Length: 315
Image 1: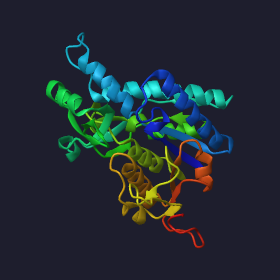
Image 2 (image 1 turned 180 degrees about the horizontal axis):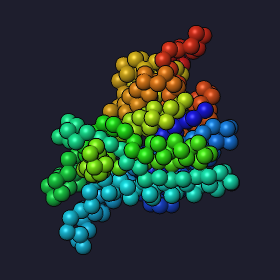
Image 3 (image 1 turned 45 degrees about the horizontal axis):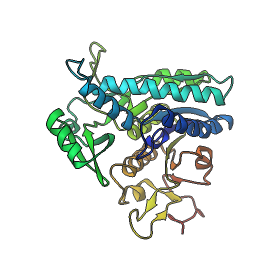
Image 4 (image 1 turned 180 degrees about the vertical axis):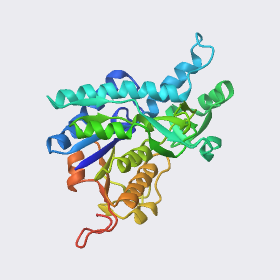
């Protein structure tokens, strides 16, 4: 099978952890072990990943660097994080899969310059902020912030992805037996001039899960696996009795009350991929990608729940 694996932000940095390189490398090793099991089982694999904490960290450093006359734009910072995370994943995957060709690509994602998201920033990036920190950064740097749990975080525009520019190249590499790491952080957001072919970066961050679903569609992938820090999608999340979903249709998944800043984008991406392709999407634990594919863990999303399959929730 051809599989696109989308690593959540927890694959490198969990909530509350310091964004140190050693911490992120530890999580990369766990993720690489899980991905390697898919490759060893004979599957073609493309890996995408998040970059929210990393791009937020670079943005703070850039905004406060006294040697700069202007901070680096978000598209350039996104490219930097793709390179950093891509090399960590590629090196670890090479070590776990001796003889396997592994390539990490900096890729670009086309967006519509008139997307309404540019006037309604809503994508979280960076570390949690106290109210006082958020107020100061808003005043001094012009940042927009929004509540995320008990803290606040910076929010930036997140336009819809229209195409992963390098998808044909990724397809070629897959055909040659290469494991590809790409589309990190949703890809570098760009607008495309159809007359000249020129790509121009924009001040935004594309949702990583939506880009992963789009890339999976462009590659004619059989499955989209979204790896995160929970075992399943839960119905009744935040209530006294949450219920783990074993299987779901796109319509059922879209009808759930899920957190906007975490599980909702994953559910929307999974539902979209299934609706547009008829393939399998699944959401589950980052340490057991093969188990998610085999149906022993995670929430499988299909066009229809197979006859005799368990009910929408367990327990």
